[in-house]
Image (tube, rainbow, N blue to C red; front, side, top):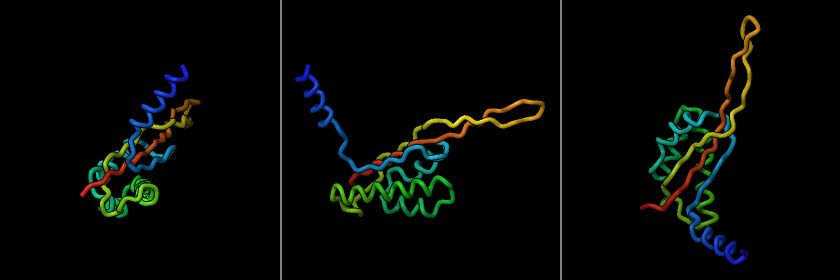
Length: 128
């Protein structure tokens, strides 16, 4: 059994994605709002994507810009890649836990408020 576990560990190491990335979890923003911003930068050069995010008026752009800067720093410092060659290969915004709150209404009634959170991932690749 121990041999099989070692084999599975080796297979996982070989199948691991080696591209530079950055993640942020539990962002207090709806994933659908974040996806709109991420769709604008997917496939673009990292420098161009950063310029788009810094000039965007959407609130999710600030979080995504900070995350993109982190991914670029990971690529430069941990993998020794050139900043000018980086492209935004993949972007994800998945749902996180939902904070459930109540909104008090008239006649002793209550409405449910869903305060959504999301997990954002940006994966960079090398382009021309």
